[in-house]
Image (cartoon, rainbow, N blue to C red; front, side, top):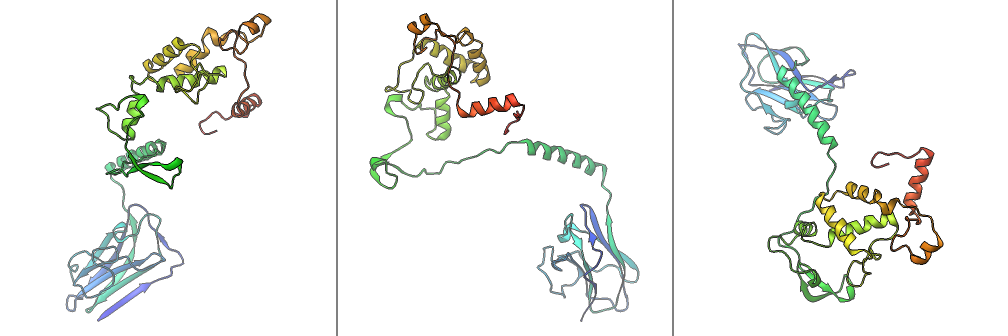
Length: 322
């Protein structure tokens, strides 16, 4: 039948590290050998950390898991044999604590002796691997989180909404494409978000670059070259300087959509650097300063006022995120 010796609820638990190996010495009586021997450990939560040798007589645990792992035939009888297993192979990872140890046999005569754990020394290759893993973890920690979206296949059907009401779709189905006023969808682009992004940033698209530089101009002058920055369509205002808008847009694309370069281009211009002093003659010639007869002078938005105050007081944190 089954016999067992065990130690549990240890006051000084054994701590497991990455390379810990568990060992014990055993002697099997050659005149009365057991049919099975088993070692099991308690991590303070359960005894489901087992290995065994010999026949399958003790039914604890699930075969092939850390709760019951077969390590082959019985060790040689008639001499002391050291049994040794990796702590990780029985589900005891780094940081685990062993509070109990059980020595079990089925039939026969078995003598158990010294048991404990040892930390296997790492090989040179393992040390080098640890260094590389550390560098990899550092690099991965520096990678920013990116939101990723996938297209459904097939995409769900979309319908025109009655009076724009989200819960009142009409029977008129619409598909991915462009408004008629913006031309035809290019044949070489897929009708999804990626295709839309490529169309928007294409050199053949006249709108994206112009809308962007117009907003940058507004940021520095208070008013865009096209005053209605929120409406760049047929119902918006005409640009005061269309050739300038065209040049800025093409320059923006030529420099690889470089925002920093475009900001620099604008603030180093003679138009931006001229005096904002108002004279009667300039006020009469250009009362709203739409022709840029003088330097820009406009109210700052709340965010910029706050940043200016923090900068002047020495409290501004310049790193990303503030």
